[in-house]
Amino acid sequence: MEKRIILRGVLAGAVAGLLAFLFARIFAEPQIDKAIAYENGRDAAQAVLDKAAGLPAEAADPDLFSRTVQADVGMGVGLIAFGAAMGAVFAVVYAVCLGRVGRLRPRTLAVLVALGGFLGVFFVPFLKYPANPPAIGHAETIRTRGNLYLLMVVASVVLLVLSVWLGRRLAGRFGNWNATLLAAASYVVAIGVVMALLPSLGDLAVNVQSYGHHPSETPLPLTDPHGRIVYPGFPADVLFSFRLASVAAQALLWGAIGLLFGPLAERLLAGRAGPAAAPVPAPAPVRP
Amino acid sequence: MSSSSVPGAAPTSTTTPVVMPVTKALAWLVGTAIVALAVYYFIGVDQGAYSVFGKDMHVHEFVHDARHFLGFPCH
Image 1 (cartoon, rainbow over the protein chains, first blue to last red):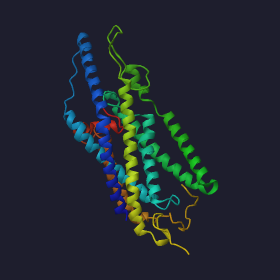
Image 2 (image 1 turned 180 degrees about the vertical axis):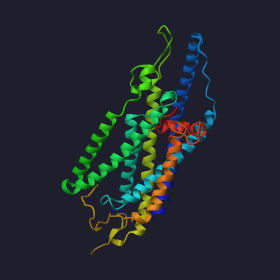
Image 3 (image 1 turned 90 degrees about the horizontal axis):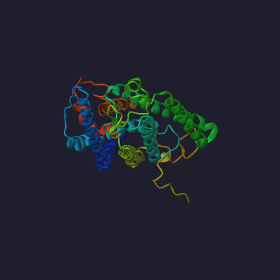
Image 4 (image 1 turned 45 degrees about the horizontal axis):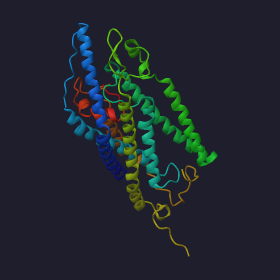
């Protein structure tokens, strides 16, 4: 039984990842290309400034894969594998939740678990540390940024699980509607405290030292020694479009996992559950 | 949460699905979660904040676009 549920989760996740890839190929890659063009132009401007100041030129990173491979194969493999992995995690959570979180149709439970995955794994961490296109992010802070992001993901998932548990505990006393509202409010407050305590990326000591106080690592205009702008800051429209596409792709991915898995699980469970526990779509016994 | 029920309520409703005995399925559930987390790590984190293959950047560069797009810190 658990094997069948996991298999369906992985399948739903892989298909969802494929959909997210098609979306990304159309909507994200143009923005990524613009971001890389900005980065290259900025590096060239910086090289001119460095040369004028008599500094040695920085060695460029070697290109291990062409942009075509990164955009077509790497992006595809990455998103499909991510989808399959999240589908597997989804299936594990679904199996544990089955019959333990109230009287829900298998389909409804699938959509709710997918919503939890979207919020816990991606969207809530995104609110604190949003996705960034290439050209944004200082190499010297990658370890700190990686740790902070993972900490944010763990905190949001753990608090989400705790709030669901709290909601179940309160359901008996306050009823489902109010218990759900209370649990949701407790989640918002708890994760809000975590977000307030974790530092903004611009406030990291290394960044303050090298760049001054700024809210993030998004590149500001490049200036020469006289303070004249020689290269603009990162284009705001590219940043917005990239982040919007990032959220949309994750919504698509998790939505597809929930909606594809739901009917599969319903069919699987309909065969298993006894006549007293048959899912809704099965015709109810007709009483005269 | 469309209906009011308490944990352990008798499965009288037509909407109550089977309860899986988690202890029996534990090996599969935990194993699956570990493999999935490993995939998550290689797509999102490896050769960025941490690296299991030392200084090599092939994994990072290959999934580069997906890593940015999925919201992981990169570079």
